[in-house]
Length: 554
Image 1 (cartoon, rainbow, N blue to C red):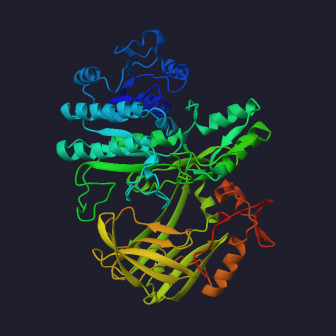
Image 2 (cartoon, rainbow, N blue to C red):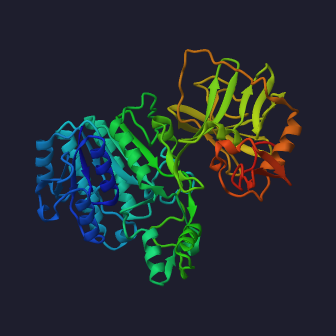
Image 3 (cartoon, rainbow, N blue to C red):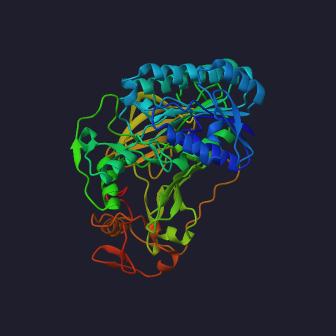
């Protein structure tokens, strides 16, 4: 496929172009190479990609010396004529627009630059895609669009109508402009809201590089909001992986889209918006501490209030990417090796039965290590009137059964749309927590995720009042095959109360280390002991859940 990537001298565009070329795509890069930050870094990226920097004249299309399927043109997004001629000549199958004037704080100083690049430039992209029948447009939005929103994790299915920087305004306008062209002219558009991207060849104005540079020079660092900041730091390879998923899968109309309850992330037009983040926010002070540990000394800090246009926290809900493309993010294991992590909850619904299964998988790890994870399987109304659960306390599986609980739901007037279904709000107390649930009568089932049930429609979202537990449906799939409910025969039968006490004694221990269980090698699993309420694998104490974890039971 021939793909135009704008912003190829930039951080993300550089990595994306290289990844696309590596897999065999024909790529044309496009960048104005402005001086928002050191131009030499941008030129170095191009040089690394095989371009002769002396050949980069304005409006001149040049070829990489090392990658025959990679070309580059230096031009401004606002240069209508150059862009028009390029589209007519190259006939791109897909366009990825990453070129933009970046930076929240700089938008307070030079707002016109954001209008020229992010609005006028994007309009040129849309017009060229429209008139050249481009089959797919993927473009960069930003987590900044969430503005004053504090409902976390940030979801694309909620409105973003309160931006607090001009940069965020231009990114939100891009999403609205894209939808208009998808609706009027059928141009498939996918907007990607990036969350604090980091990695090699990154922008020098980002926190990582600013902190390290200051630390190595013995200078103070400015710490805004007095250190009470959280960011969903996302490695650049994960960003690239998400972009490529969208390159290969143009947006399609949502057949269940309801104009009376419009979903901001989808449309009756070929339009889609995704978050791309790590789904794991990090406190700024923890981030700084990691830098200090690496350089071997404490960094002097200048604590300041929150800057204008900035937000105190970001946290991405990436469930749509997980559901649509089995998207995963990278993390590091205890040995510093990169692993892929995917996780989720599946609820299978039959006429009179339901089964909820949790999963957590790590690429490259032996599945036997999953024995260390507390991932329950719960059958509702199995056998009739009973609730059966199979849960693990390593190395044993426990089978418990109890009467189906009676949940006294209060139905509320609020409505929302989840997965294209109109849902009603309800509240109830269960398991020592208050739950807010959203159910749809369009799917007339009394069940829901985990152990939640008893409403006149399938529960598609449930949130506990402590903020720890959040279930949300991301895909509804009809299957013809009969759902089988098989309870393992080798499980230890145990009364529910006895099991909960046993489990809470182990998993509720606040002194567990924060090492994920999958750090443990498969061959070590056979030697499991418990000492003073702490689980040991050999001589290593294991935390089965993060310190904030509280079991879903009383």
